[in-house]
Amino acid sequence: MTSASDISAGRLAAGAYDEAFCDLHASLDQHEARVAAERCLFCYDAPCVNACPTGIDIPLFIRQIATGNVQGAGKTILDSNIFGGMCARVCPTETLCEEACVRNDAEGKPVIIGELQRHATDAVMASGRQLYRQGPRTGKRVAVVGAGPAGLSCAHRLATLGYDVVVFDGRPKPGGLNEHGIASYKAPNNFAQAEVEWMLDVGGIDLRCGQMLGRDFTLADLRRDFDAVFLARVWPITRHGRGHRPSIAGALVRVLACYAGAGM
Image 1 (cartoon, rainbow, N blue to C red):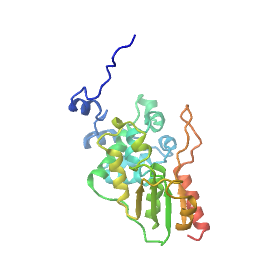
Image 2 (image 1 turned 60 degrees about the vertical axis):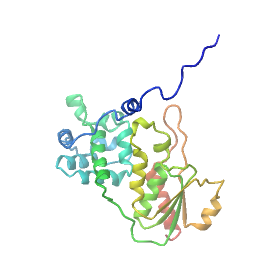
Image 3 (image 1 turned 45 degrees about the vertical axis):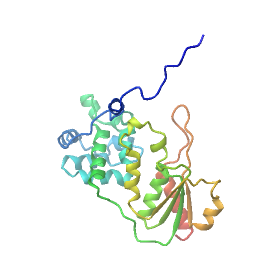
Image 4 (image 1 turned 120 degrees about the vertical axis):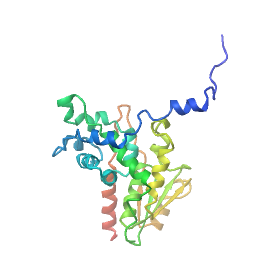
């Protein structure tokens, strides 16, 4: 026995979709952020920093928020993790920095580090101010294959060091996991693309989407035309959520070591 499917698109009004897929939590306002920041004990050798995969100086940026220096807090975050805005939205802080927060022992409730990080990084982007610029030109060109978080982080850091960077990606839009792999309701209002556009404003980065390694160019082509190549491939994740994935920082160090070996 069969029956007609009741699945169909557009059954809700547009406003209902907007309401259902908006931010789960509203952004902190200035007063809320300062009250939350003042709960931080600004620990020396802070457990939250040790728990942060990107090593953000969490006590420092929270102290900056507490003293009203929100732009400075944003820069502290972005210096360690240029994707600090997206990470503030999707990082499982409850099992990382917030789980390690010493306030859990005393009060059973951590400092809301993730929301404070979002408050600071959103303030930077909303200001329209660009914190980074391309460094003095080295005359060297670097190819980056993959316009996801790893590739764009590498490209951004290289640009600030004065390299001219060309980023290739097979998809029509950049962003990688942030754009194509994260549910849209976790980062509404096209945040992933806004973050990429802000990042590319550093200068010195030429983004070429729709260009795929092995189809449109080869590794030999890149080695011929560029002084160095960074392959920002996707690393497999096991069903337990862990895989063999070198850190972005570690990969960048190895790339820069190659530059040094090549006289760059």
